[in-house]
Amino acid sequence: MGSTKIIIAGGSGFLGKSLAKWYSSNVEDCEIVILSRSPRAIDSTRTVVWDGLNPGDWAKELEGASALINLAGRSVNCRYNKANRRAIMDSRIDSTRILGQAINQCKNPPKVWLNSSTATIYKHTYGQAHDEKRGTIEATPEAKDSFSIEVAKAWEDEFEKAQTPDTRKLILRTAVVFHTDHGSAYAIMRRLTRFGLGGKMGDGRQYVSWIHIDDFCRAIDWLLSSAEAEGIVNISSPNPITNAELMANFRKVCGRPIGLPAYRWMLEIGAIFLRTETELIIKSRRVVPGRLLSDGFTFNFPEIQQALADLENG
Image 1 (cartoon, one colour):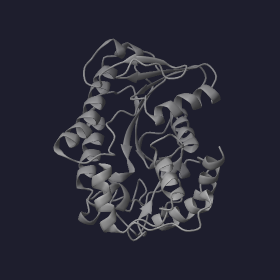
Image 2 (tube, helix red, strand yellow):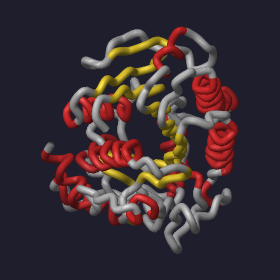
Image 3 (tube, one colour):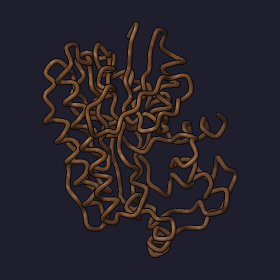
């Protein structure tokens, strides 16, 4: 992309840190600015404080920027009580709204705006995979996903409403990103496996859509560099697998031939103690990156075996 300035809103999480590190290592003359509620510096990147709600001096950073990537949003790894539901919804809607307003006020707005969404927006399915053209959006009682889909739809609607005629816009429906960061899905599953708990979860039939962190970063750069890319894009590996297959691969890379399974009733009880929701495990997310593949993007880690081996040895 040449000399660039990329703004990452909500960039203090592991995705934002990973993007900043990737650009620092792979792109010359690239300035990364993190918008964060915390003034704490992140590695060598510049951090600008914002609250994700109100206008402020942070908006000046958008002038002449090459790209804005919005990753802001409260973690969904919690119990969906009233307060947490409100925080999950508001953190996504408010940050998207204020960024849209800030772009609209720019004399020289960012060339492109990538806004997070989630692959969870698609219907729970064991059948045909969802791509951007044939994906169905619908809640399923079995998956307990009505709130998550409500949030995702409201999030995307707010983004679509933003009046930014001179800025190319993309919605990122991102799958589970595998990364070694503490607290990530990969780290949690690896820890369970090493403790002998790496068996299937529930009936094990539910699909897991995932992407290696390196391919996530490369896909973001691909979309920023592709002048014609806009609209909805699935950010996921082309090969989702069942939970049973996933855990079998974790056992292999961790050298654990046996893993105790976790039945549905065990997951319900465990979720209460861990202060999370079973939907994160039991929903079958079978999502494929139709647009990335059709546009010629090549994955470095298209198969789960390659991805886990790289993370384990990296």
